[in-house]
Structure formats: structure tokens, C-alpha cells
Image 1 (cartoon, rainbow, N blue to C red):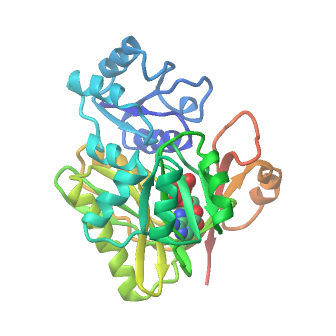
Image 2 (cartoon, helix red, strand yellow):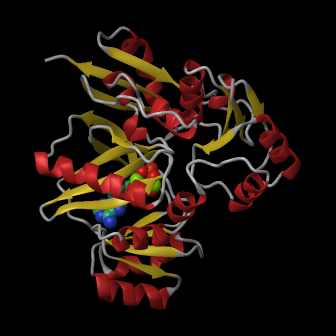
Length: 350
Ligand code: ATP
Ligand code: MG
Ligand code: MG
């Protein structure tokens, strides 16, 4: 059977490996850390840094196709894998665009989609200009490497500006106008090599301290908002000639849907699909990158996904005894505040 190479060894890589195994594939995980969640279930773990060319060559030799579970893979590693003739799916364009919030916002607005107003900020002068143009409140975010709300500072008044810039520690940033949304939703879409597109039902997301807390399906959306959400996701996938699953985060506003960000991979807000659909987002991604037809991801249950973060792990024994609750634990050795340790999908019966 074929082997799927996965760059990154976190929980997303773990759940991709499980889905791949169910379809008869082997997985080889490339991840610098030892004892990572994906290494417990993958057939092979190459433990090396993304700048280790010998290790990348070994990885390329062991796999038939390469995918990734996080978007901050150095482009040099992908260049090398490309050069060795291993297809990388999703492709480089999606990765390049989503690695930089400025490029990402420009891409989305060029597509005609609504985003928060934005401007590039590298110094005090840029910031003053951006505030004059966009207004306050606003959010300053590092252009690269941010996740779970890290690398962000809210600017409520002019007095916050200097501190917000200092928080960026010299990194290039983007100022975003604050979007007055009623709630947040996301769509997990997938596209295969043949160009077929399928989207899961949008989920409604609640964040706490910048970290996703829960996703609920169905989301509160009108029929036309639901259609918009799915169509704009398909538009993004097609424009990128994308292969794989993608998460598209949206703000619901009185003026329509505003795109917050895209993630070129399976997404935390799509974990509900494990209990809500016959084919979940992990299998859909594996199908796409393996050149298969997409599966039927229609939703057959109402689900609430709750992330288990840090000390939430203390509740696992109780949750284990709950009716209608499906636990997914990532096997991380150490509990840390803010660390995603697992999640629980609760199936809601009417
Ligand atoms: P993730 O873990 O989803 O990758 P992230 O660190 O990339 O998160 P964002 O998704 O940009 O960060 O922002 C985190 C949260 O902050 C959003 O889900 C939203 O609740 C809020 N937020 C971000 N940008 C804006 C904005 N322009 N206006 C209003 N709220 C915002
Ligand atoms: Mg993000
Ligand atoms: Mg986000």
C-alpha cells in the first residue's frame, strides 16, 4: 500500500494518521519533537528538524505523497521535497498565502470577499497611519506564526498603540479593524485532484482567551448565509487549485459574512465531523491527497465539540461516563495551561 508523509506531528497529524490507516495507507510523520501525538499512531516517525536535508531525503524516499498538519513549514523544506519529485498536497500557493496574514487578506479581498479593513505595520509611523485610516478599536497581529490568539494586541485607544507595537517585538505586523460580529462560524471544505469540491455544514465557534472553546452544529445561520459560506469556501478552494481539506473562519455580521482567516489543513473547528458525519474531515483530507473521490460528508447529527484544554483533563473521568459523549485524547505527556489535550464530541438527541 501507499505511504502518506505528514509534516508535523501534533494532534491533527495523529488523527490524519488514524484516518489514513483506516483506508489502508501507512503514514510517515516528520516532526522535530520526540514522543509527539502523531508518532504514537503513525507507522514511522522521522525525528529531525525541517532544515535537516538528509532526514528530508529519507522522508521523501519513504513516502508517495506529502501533506502537512500545520502551516508554518519552512518553504526550504518544501522546495527540497518538490525537487525530489514528491507531490506536496495542498500545494505551495495555499501555504505561502496562509503563512502571512497580509498576503492572505490581500488574496481574499482580491477574490471579492469581505475582510476586516487592514494595513501593513512595520514601525510607529505605519501604525499611526493605519490607525488614522482604519480607526479604533483595532487589532495588531504579527503577520506570521500566530495561532490561538498569540501574537495579537487589541488597541482600544491611541494610548495602547505604543505597547501594542512593543508586543510585536520587531516582527512585521498587520493592523485589522475590529469587526462587529454577532458570532463566528467556520466551514471545512475539501477539494480533490479531479476538482470536485465538498463542504461540511458550517459550525458555530466560541473562543475563550483566543483559543477555540466549542464548535456547535448546526450553526445559527439563515439559509442564504449558509449558501454564501459554502460558495465562498468553494471559490477559495478553486482559486488555489487546492487539494485537501481547508478551514475557513468567518464572522457573521449584519452586512454579511466577513472572512477572518483560512487554514490550509484540517481544522480544530471540524473535529465535530468525527461524530456528525459518515466521512469526517480527516478522511476527506486523506481521500483528496491520495487522489480518491471525496466521501459523503453530509451531517446526520447535531453535535457540540468541546476542546479539553489544560486542566480540563481533570474532567475526563466524568466525561468518560457521560451518555452520547465521544472522547478524543491526544496522548500528550504533559498538561500545560492553554495546551489542547483532547476534545469531546457530544451528540445532541432531540
Ligand atoms: P487560530 O488559533 O484560529 O489560528 P489566530 O491566532 O490565527 O487563531 P485569529 O483567528 O486571527 O487568531 O483571531 C482569534 C480570534 O480573535 C478570532 O476568532 C476572533 O474571535 C478574534 N478576532 C480576530 N481578528 C478580529 C477582528 N479583526 N475583529 C474582531 N475580532 C477578531
Ligand atoms: Mg490562525
Ligand atoms: Mg483563527
